[in-house]
Length: 170
Image (tube, one colour):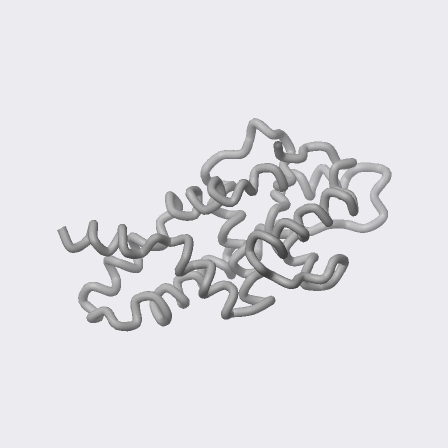
């Protein structure tokens, strides 16, 4: 289950998440690295970081996914257009791109990866679809900064493009 206590943001929980990414997504992220920080920001909601940063026992402030979610959204769009739909006629590319980058696909990715067990939120009950989609977009930015190849592979695997493309042809 998600984390909602400021005490949950600790090395043990953070390292479990990095281990998960390394094992399940075949990354090679070094713990406590600048790269690991981006991946931790990707699962930290703005409400949690505010609560954490305002708590009395905090020495180091933590960031959240807010800015990186915006960057990740743009990067996903770029990769979908250049890597996934690059052979499509321009006339169809817009509709297919729009279908591929809908939040419902990001929500499915979030759920299928089981990211709920790692996310830092102010209240566990607050994990809605918008947060799930934002986490995936921020995670995409962290992947991009780590390896564009890993991000492209991830998107090709998890966006189930054939299902969407078949749907558009109908």
